[in-house]
Structure formats: structure tokens, C-alpha cells
Length: 367
Image (cartoon, rainbow, N blue to C red; front, side):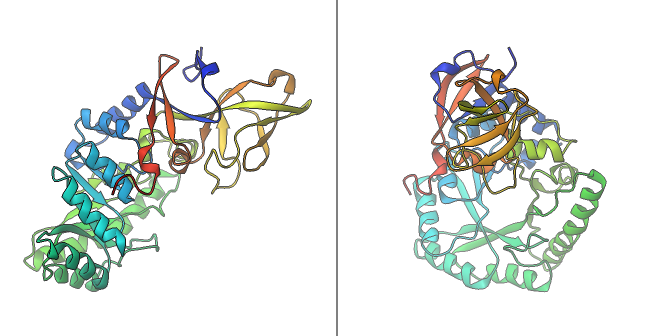
């Protein structure tokens, strides 16, 4: 039996997402080996959104985390994570929700990012009314061009401005270089180093201004091997915990294991070379061009079409895939795929033994 096959697949309705617990633990162990100090790890939980997965990281000694939503932050508070960065500038009601999180989970140090004076002032006002100071990081635009302020004098002035506000405490810089994903590691490193250079200069300017040297949080999965060697920054990969077909193909220097698959079934045999599965784009991330999934037990299958609940494949011989055949697929992009499911089946020794709620797929849990 292959590592991914389930002895009790007949008990699992499809489509489903299946997590292989032992392989998740192997990926966590590998991540730890790729860095000199475990305290420099701040994994992003947007990939997994599952409290039990976070607890596996905690058991391995990882205590700092990054997230993108209030619900993900709340999940981290629920498992008593020590330090949680909301890497998303809260605006409007999200500021109040973040305050409520800090009040409800006092054992967790929450922080957020900001990239302009208006947002920073709004955050400060709400926290100051309650006599609290929220740790904040200046969000830097190092090439993603979606949020953040470009490193330079304006960013330095923003950092200084944060020190004048009563409801926040500036502690560092956040630089996400998700636009860098070249397969060639030499090119990827060159681009990463070039993007980071201005961050390092800004950190020096802050220190020269007599302000405590900022903590720097940088990178994601593609640039993790580069940032891991800098010695003085925190790194925040996230996809490593499950891995996916896209990163497995494009980042060959990172030997993480596929640890989360989509399980689907043949629901119709169309003709001698075409079959239909119950894996529509409501069941696997649909933001990328096809193929959005690679089937481990049908590696030569070609995706012909996909709609909300159906996926049509061309195979060499449909007779090899009668109705009811179970297929195991590696998603091209695992992060948004996980968010499509309410629960995941947990596998040990080729048997699904439990299920974990994907609690942070919701926009709100309690807060």
C-alpha cells in the first residue's frame, strides 16, 4: 500500500481533505533543521488554520506565529501561543476585534502591522482608551506592491511617529517578499538580497536615531532558505507544514513532504478515455490555471474541464477507473484549498483515525 492510500477510504465521503500526521511532524522537524535558532521561526498559520497542527509546532518548541485574519489570531490565542503577529493592518471594526482578542487571551502577546499614520493613529486611539499599548511593526513594501510603505525616509519618519502615540509600541519591521519565487535558487537569492538590502539600511537608520534596534520579520516559503542564514531576523514560512504541488515543483531545494491531499472519487465514466470526479473548483483552489491538482495514483491523467462540483479527466483507459475509484490528489496551492473544507481527516498508518476542525477558515470564531 502506498503511503497515501487509506485502508478505510470507504468510510470517508468525498471530496475531502486528508492530513497525514506523521508527515506533518516530519516537515516541522525539517524546518527546525534548516535554521540555527528555533526562536527565529515564526510560521504563518494561514496554510493550516487548524489548532491541532499549531499544537504540533508548539510541541516541537515553536512559540511565535504569524497570521492574516482575526480568526487565525483567535485560534492561536485558544492554544495559548506566546507571540502572535497579525500581518495585516487592522482597519475599522478589526481594530476593536483585535483589542477584544488581547483582552480575552492575556497569555498571548498580540501585535499587528501598520503602514501609514492614519491607520496607526486609529489603532492607538482604541487601545489607549483601555490603557493598553499594542506592539506594532511597520509593514514594508519590498516589491509585492499590495500593502506597506517603501523603505526609506518616509518609513523612518513613520517609525518615529509611532513612538509618539500612547496606544502602540513600535517593535520592528515586517517585509514580505512573496513576489520572489524563481525556481533557480541563485536568481531567487539575488532578488531576495536586493529586496532586503533597503530593509537592513532602514534598521540601521532607526538604531542610529537612538531608537532600540527593530525586530525584523521577513520572507515566506520561497525565500526562507535565504533569510534563514541572516542570523538576526525572524522567518515566517507557512506552506512547509503541508507543502503542495506548486512549491514542490518550483522550490526543489526544500525537500518537504506532501502532507495534505484531496480525496475524490470517480462518479461517472464518460467514454473509453474520459472520467468525471467529484472534485469541482469548490473543493480545490481555483485561482490558478489548470492543472490545479496532480493525482498520485493517476499521474498521467489530463484535466479537460472543471466546474463547481465536477472535474473531467482524460486517461489512457477509463476501464482502469471504474465508478467509485478513489483518487488522491496533491493541490497546486494548498493554502486556499484547506479553507474550502470545514474539517480534515487525520491519517496514521494508512488509516483515517480522527478529524480536525479547520476552525480558522471562518471569518469569525467568537471574537
